[in-house]
Length: 464
Image 1 (cartoon, rainbow, N blue to C red):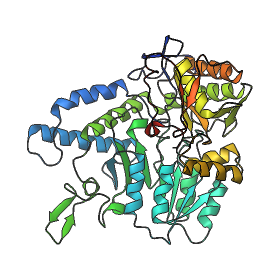
Image 2 (image 1 turned 120 degrees about the vertical axis):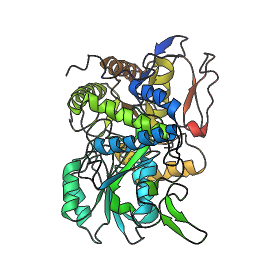
Image 3 (image 1 turned 90 degrees about the horizontal axis):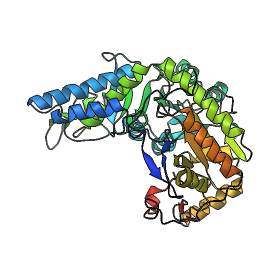
Image 4 (image 1 turned 30 degrees about the vertical axis):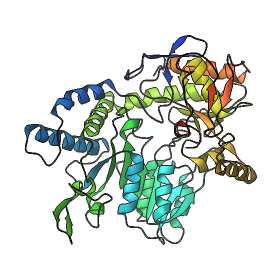
């Protein structure tokens, strides 16, 4: 497919312009799609159509309540269908906030003990590392210098003693866009009787979800439905016994002061008033992606990935992290460094001077980025000591550009031209000041929209 053709969608806000420090406005280029995507027009339309009918779910006799309940349950069925599951089968879809909540939910519900082993990898997002460290012993699959591992690496971890209780693995790296051989990995784990959770946060917008995985988690905000809903999918039997992750109304059949009888899943796992609007939005997004079709999505994104990754690797002074530029088993994601310029300054200048939004820092994947950068142990110790003192100015990291269904070839080319200028030593039009508490850079300027920008630790990219 020719990537110079129009994008597959025009998300909400695609034509917005933003101020730059030279006093001009430029069309905003959103190359931070691996973090969050803008809303699909069909999603906004579905939410607008639904809102007049919004009411309580599962507990009201009014017409609006019944209609809202129907919409919520239709979203649940759509989630299962999107994940390759039979909506009337043995799996349930638990609607939650996002992938992080979904994995924490599962970590609680599996009732693992400290002696249990969860096999995971150093490639994971923190959301698929930290929850398992709370409830079990982690066994990590290492990666090579290019940030990848192979099936043999996984099987060695699965075959080590003691036998693992779970394999928790990403479907696509949020840092490099690398796609592990997930179907083969799942088959190897199942051959050994080990259930598998796939963190599909990055995978879901770009490739079909692995139907053979025991558990799958993904987020609406990464698939053009930024309304606060995500999903955890797994066998009903995993949630039938024991108390749920959240306790409260809607999760029970009977309650007195000494006893509770929990209701059946999935309602058992969704205490409190659910995010019905988020569920409606997610349903609309899944339908919109399905209407485009995976063949068209994969073909265009492979073309964009090649343009992005080979283009960056060809720029003098730019180092592409992860698999080689011509690798075909990656998403349209590229993480890179610019010689002589820190990642935070590169990202700040791309935004303030070129209206290009990227992500920088460690991408909520500290162990992975340290390996990709090839940092020596003493350098890791030094920056960690500095961070403990509240100073993030030397936080290691890189810059990530990531495309989505609304990305055009022109967007990629604008990034490549801008990065080439920075790498060639183009002087900044204004000074930049680093905030040590966050590590971020801010332009020193009187230009409206920048002059009143506030540097806050809560808004920092780098710490992750």
